[in-house]
Image 1 (cartoon, one colour):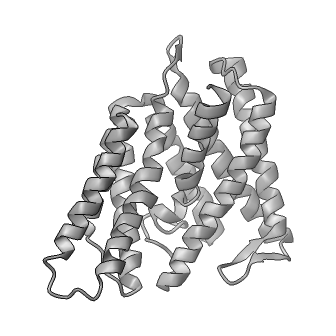
Image 2 (tube, helix red, strand yellow; image 1 turned 45 degrees about the vertical axis):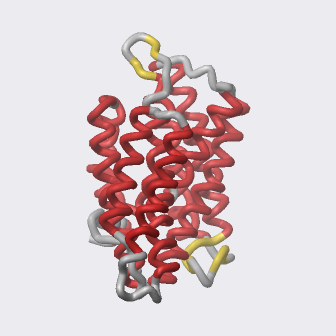
Image 3 (tube, rainbow, N blue to C red; image 1 turned 180 degrees about the vertical axis):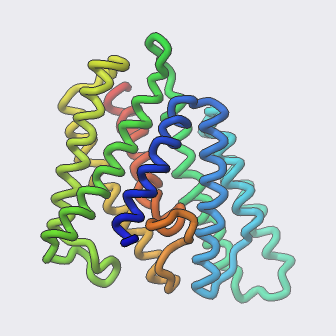
Length: 280
């Protein structure tokens, strides 16, 4: 089986399972997110170690999972700031008792970056899914989750298909040599179409979204750009660490972070765009 076939075969199995969790929401979805955060943190710190650096893995992973709980409970932003302050104090406090102080800066930085990159950014997906509002038996958060996932995944699919067939002009050959400007156009078309189609399907058959066509298009364009940025950032991390993939848990896709590198960025951007502009 080729890599392309593995990618689509995996998607054919994973996507229906994810849709079930999206629909169920609540503790089911929270549990799924916590498992993803756990695996993502382990993969991130594995890349740190591949680079030859250290991280306080237990503390960092624990705080990342705690952030998931805080986001699920939708606590005030002051509590989130307090959590990051405590994280920094705990990490620095532990460094004071290390015999080897030569890696204090890098260990502290790598630990906190992992918590922010995986735990903090990804936990925003819980805010999307738990968005208040309900029509009939359908949670409004279901639409928001499907919206951001559709844009992100279709953007990735469009970039892969168009880039593989017509890609000639490289976007960032030093970081991600397979990505091309032609693929970027494919991402833009597929991702924006995913936003518009998701809105139309939900408005007609599931739940009235009150999302204008203008915002559907703008959000699609913004999230496609953000998705490509997130994908490139993950490639940057892997190149710096000297690894091909962040992990091997997803056949044809590598690790969890290889699959969710775009989601990590598109989810919080989508949330704040909707919160501050569309539904303010």
